Length: 115
Length: 115
Image (cartoon, rainbow over all chains, first blue to last red; front, side):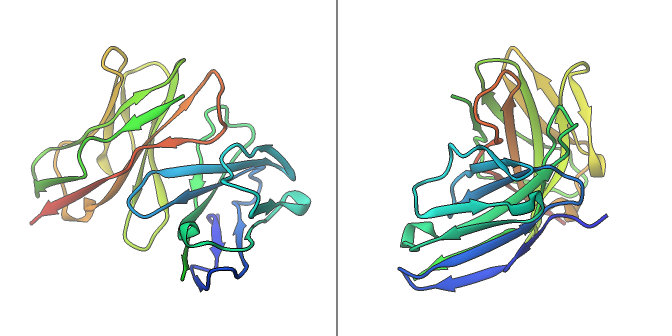
C-alpha cells in the first residue's frame, strides 16, 4: 500500500510569490490533515478535511493560506502571497474515518523556504 | 487547551543500553497518546499509541511506552538501543472529548545512540 505522498519535496520562493503544495493521502483515507513545523518548534495543526469538506480549520494562520480537497482525494495548500515567516516544513497526514483513535499516517513533508 | 512537553532536546545512549525518552501531557479529558519517529529526510512514522486498557503499550522496532495517568506521562522506552534508533522522536496527544481535530505535538527529542 502506497503511503502519503507530498509534492514538491522542497520549494524556494521569494517573498510575495505564490506556492502550492500537494498531498496525496493513502487510498481510502477520508481524513486528511495539514500540519506545519517552523524551525525548531512544535509541529502545529493547520486544518482537517473529511472527504472534500473542511472539518476544522482552526489552525490556519491567516487568510493567505487556502486549502482545497476537490473530489475528496488529493489536497492542495496554497500560500499567497508568501511571507518570510511561512518558511518551514509542511506535513500532510491521513487516516481512516472508521478508526475511532484516528491514527494518522504522515507524508515526508514539503520544506518551504521564503527568501 | 492541550499540550505536550518533551523536556529533553537530546538524549544520548550507548548502544545496547536501555533508553527512555520522556513525555508529559496536559488535556482536559482523557487522552489518546502517540509516539512518532522521524528519520533524516523522511516523514513522521507511527510507532505506537495508547488508547485504553493496559498501561504498557508495545509498538514497532521493539519500542514500548508506559502510560501513567497520575503523572500524566507517556515515556518511550526500549530495553536495548541500536545505532539505527538514532532519530527525532515526537510525542503527541489528542483529547478524546473534543477540541481541535489535529494532534498536539511536543517539540521533539533527538535520540543519539553511540556505538
